[in-house]
Image (cartoon, rainbow, N blue to C red; front, side, top):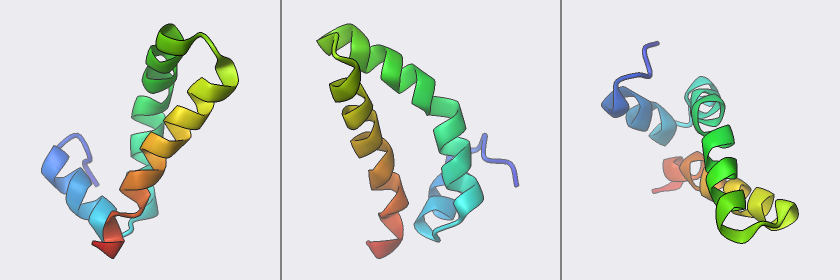
Length: 63
């Protein structure tokens, strides 16, 4: 499936498709972590922030 189309990605996340979530993780994890670490300069907290941000899309199917 082509997740480069945001509408397709969002719909797949809402349906709980694991491959869509993995695409999201692969695409954004490093960028989010780099941004978080630049703001707080604490590796453990930056990782927690990234996990919290990336967990929410996984819960879209409940809404």
